[in-house]
Amino acid sequence: MGKSGVFAFILCFGAAAAAQGQTPGAANCTDLMAWMTGGISGPRVAQLVAQRGIVFKNAQANRTLLLATGATPQLLQILRDTPARGAENCPKALADVSRDVKNQQYADAGRRLRRLIAVNGTSAALHFALGYVYQQQEDWAGAFDEYDLARQLDPGLPEGHSRLAYLYSRAGDGGSAIAEARTALSLDPQNAEAYRFLGLGLFASNEPQAALHAFQEALARDPGSADTYYDMGIALRSGGQPDAAAASYRKAITLRPRFWQAHNNLGLILHEQKDFAGALAEYKEALRLAPNATEVRNNLGNVYCDKGDYDAAVAEFRELFRSNPDWQTGHSCLAKALMAKRDYAGAIAELRLALRQDPNNSAEHRVLGQALLLTHQAREALRELRLAVALQPDSSLAHHYLATALFDIRDFAGAEAEFRVTIGLQPTAENHYYLAGCLMSMGRYNQALAELEIAAQLEPSRELYRARKDELMKVMRATAESQ
Image (cartoon, rainbow, N blue to C red; front, side):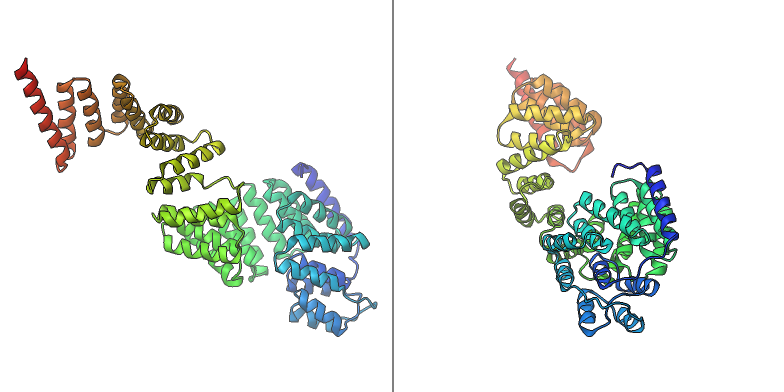
């Protein structure tokens, strides 16, 4: 996918010009079945049949296989009304591929398609379907190669260009995505999928309003596209319109109830809005539909963590890392849950794993330092807390815990300096109280008393500060009388 945007545009323009100079061939049954297996909608396949004609027998056995592959009643009626040229039978093997795709058994689907391509390697539709299977497996390089070959073999098929536009948009190459989508639209100005992928290209090019307009054009031509509503939801959420994005995801789910990605993304919005019950419901439904979707289980664990259900959070993350040991996020949240359950050793192990992935995360160094302090490992805590302060010098919490670690190893001067920095950043009663304790340890009672007086003034309802002040005054009087 290393083509420049300009070069891709030249290639696309050439393909469009070539396609416009020739009449696409009539469709055989392999074409129809492979197009539907590759995710082209039934209504769109009906349009292609109306445009191209067919060259296979319109027999009941063929109609049965087409129906199994996803043919709509509209398509079957058009086939009945379209004079057929030729006597080809529909390949049952493609119906098996379609079944595998519907069941998300993409490895099996890919093996079947590669066997078919070994026999019929010039079929653009078979390469197109294989590109779709690779896409579902997130094999982006394989998908690109197959879609590109399909485009070369059938340059007049707009979907070949629009799928390349999708892959370019995923790679962040908005310019090439826009060029491919516009080529698809030059072939078929009413192509809803091309408008959808034009929207993705514009979104990748940081043109959110233009992207939304393209999505609306897509919906005007195909109002039943759950994918377009889903993509629109992504653009709306990115543009700071979470409620509109949630509505778009809900529409996508209405159109396709098993759309687990839409359930997941709706859960993300509800989670951000602190509607934990709603987020949990969406994540659980997404996980029911896609039990192996690790990112959903990660999100589910995060919700449990944020709502304080730490037992459930630990259970979800343990299952996540058991089923996918290479998954890299979630360790920090699991550590938070373990800290809340006072499993400090477990939290320390998880935080170390989190820091392998993100060594510059100040908050994780700080929490690791806290956990080490709680397990009486002050020297190790010092290292982590100094890193936390170096990475985020304006963190009052990092300075506070660094001061606490220095106090634990009896470096009172160092602790005093850090407590004073903490107060400079966050002059709370509690921070003045801790500084007073440090000053008392150094025998600087008058200064400690002044800090306790500030703490008591800042929080007059807190009995602790007045009690410590009274105790210190008694100590000071006793010391004065003994001298």
